[in-house]
Amino acid sequence: MLKYEFLTTKELDQALDYLKEYDNVEIIAGGTDVLVNMHNQDFDNSNLDYVLDISNLKGLDKIKKEEEYIKLGPLVTHANIMKNPIIQKEYPLLAKAASTIGSTQIRNRATVGGNIINASPAADLLPPLIALDAKAVLESQTKRRVLPLSNLVTGPYRTDIKSNEILTELKIPLDNQQLYGNFQKIGRRKALAIARLNLALVTKVDANQFFADTRLVPGAATPSPQRFEKLEAAIDGEKIADINLEEIGRLAHQEMVSITGERWSTPYKKPAIATLVQRALREIIKEVNHNE
Image (spheres, rainbow, N blue to C red):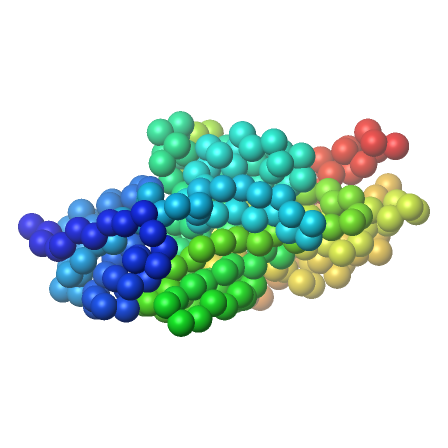
């Protein structure tokens, strides 16, 4: 049976005090990952003395639009992201990604901060947030640091967050030029499924109909979500009417295998990632043509 002391507060300063004062603290917010893990028979509770509930910390459940950034508090739920008019207008691919997560009950509980800190290779919010160049704000009692989200996640279920830090904000840059974005996902079923593969694609299209500044991030394709920079370079400079989707698909699975090597899942994932990239590009091309 798990034995631990439960800590809770509404004040960020008090929460940071707890992290400085106590060792072996597990932070919980929505609890949709942490509680499941804690009650798994393989869970190692030898380093669990305290559980710190941060779900009621003041001000960390807001979505705000400022001059240069959209700011997400870590306690914003997937349901909030999915329905928020700011997100729907500026970054609809993020709203779409949130809408694919779990069930209505999960989306009402699970938080963006939890999805990031859990750092699952199949996390649905990490690919669009990395593609949008989001930055994470981490705070301790003595220090505040900001780092790209791509640097925060260091591997499967691993992050660079320190034991005395709390993720207090996500900052997504606003772009003066129109961005086109798309999110795709394949699971074992249409709902309540962990992604077998997902993908976020963000790009610009210039006045001459050429792709530019493309950012493409698959999830569940590599140990942790990361940009496919060779594939991005292959897309940039291509005219939307002339792009060779078959070749782009081939380059997608080629770059995946160059990172992961051949694995048991490769025969499935090679055509799957090619299809997702092609589907995302087709939908963006359709959107561009619709806006003309």
